[in-house]
Length: 109
Image 1: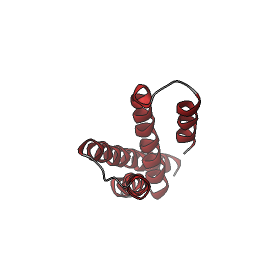
Image 2: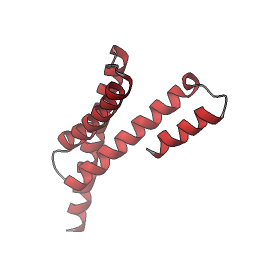
Image 3: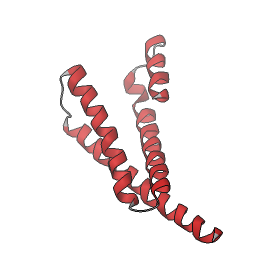
Image 4: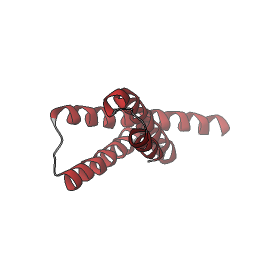
């Protein structure tokens, strides 16, 4: 949310255009969702793919509702691909989070 606010200010008060920041925004979204999946999987300590997938799906649902209710538009094909990748990257983060937290708990025991 903070990144969104920063980019909104950049787009509003500078001459930058959304097209020029598209790759930066996409990369930060991937990093954020991987981190969210990693943290949620690490806290749950089991079924990282499921909890990470739910993290990605909740993110996609919030974006979809904002777009549908705010702009009266559904996802296009490109957005469906992006949000599928977002969910998959969150699942990978969840799996890694479970494995790292499980390995750390085994070492301390």
